[in-house]
Amino acid sequence: MAERIRHAEGPLDGPDDLKQLRRDLGAWLKSRREAAGLTQADLAERLGLKYYSFISQVENGVGRIPQDIYPIWAEALCVPPREFAETVIRHLEPGLSRMLEHDEARSDEI
Image (cartoon, rainbow, N blue to C red; front, side, top):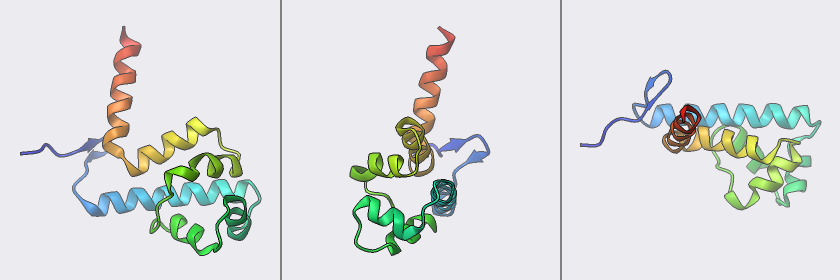
């Protein structure tokens, strides 16, 4: 049987935990957008999106950013690409994020 995914606060028990991580990512994205002085419509325009409602969906944890626009989104928010990628991975792929963190911690010990 597969082992439960664990994170710093304990195991991820299911979809509710993952939904909360998406909402947390949305809140982070919104705070970065606001810090950049952009409205949802401004950001949508910079991303080449026809409707700004997609920005709202992502910020509310409902939508998911297509990977092909990660670099453009990071640039629009004035967030370094690595920070953007690490934040997205931590929230959307927590198991993968922990694997990378574990591997990085092991290489620091050597």
